[in-house]
Image (tube, rainbow, N blue to C red; front, side, top):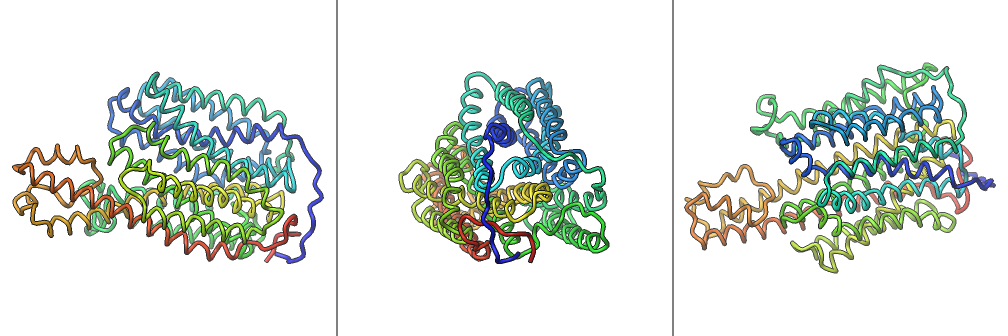
Length: 539
């Protein structure tokens, strides 16, 4: 990338087209956020276990991540406006399937359709923003996508929790349907270049990256269920006693490397690759992708940890969870919107390093002040500070990629963003779960052995190989089936309470370490002067 900047003399455009793009981001994010809130209602309606319903969530993420690069090429070939309208209509169809679904199989199929649609919507948003806005307007437009994502999370939890409690889960997806119709209407205010029929779709590369994403996502998502190393009873198969989860992770990494090797080879021979690696052509763009992966993974880990403690440990409702996460989600929403105002005064490098410093300090603070009650003022303060850093980072690193690439590669930037965010979300959630359960198992094992109030005969009646997060009331129910005395039950409950809290504190401390490491890629973000953009993409 050249160090010679050029000042962006922009022409102001109407914000009306951006309303449609903002709502399109809300459409996808609201659908994703509404699924966890609706699990209880679906379980009751269909008479299936929660794991059957959660398959729909996994299906959506898998399809998006696996197809997003192909989606970018389809958009370039057919034309962004045309394909955008088609997939938004398909998303509306998936919402209708959700509302009318007679079984959980319909729910899973509906989320498959929604995921395939989102795989094209994600790169479309970037391409259409690049086609309709430039300069500071483009930066603001990109920032609004992060705002829409956070706003959807807040509204889905609040609206979904309320409707799910008093009406049912199906009306939540009526909102998704209404959003899709609104986006379709606003799409007629957008403009974009026509499709290029000469654009080829590299099918082999699509299969490589699709298989890599599927393997990585399944591997990370099942670290808890199948075993981190040794296969447990829930694993579908084992390889000489080894869990298939880490094997899938390794296979995914190998396939991912094969994808990059194939793409470089195809580029050298003058053929059109599935995604242009020139969007990652310099250390600055690669640093932006690394930073994006880490911050989304950290957000996913926190979004997993808080509901885990509120709903499972404290035994409270999803609505309580949404209220507890409200300070964080609102902060992300506001920060993602306002951070673009600082682009004129500070370089991305400065904002990135400062923001990762904030997330590190926030996680460190939480690791010391957190208790089994998330409503304490110190905990809310920690979530607030983390939200400021996270909201700024998600917008910043995306903006770095968009402004560094020429308009014709905007779809490729969108596909990189979609792949990175979906994979990071799966990895962050899975690693947080495996880490917390692993730490809890060690804590419980050590505490039980060293606690004289818990005799060996009671230990023999409890399966310590299946330690997981349970509320104190659930633990009392389990111990009621043993010959434990009241004093021994209370001792076991105290062990459970202390072990959970230590696991949470150590888990947050580890996440703070990951955040601190991320300051390194953030320090390699662009340092160009405020109000200026790189002249061209290069090395």
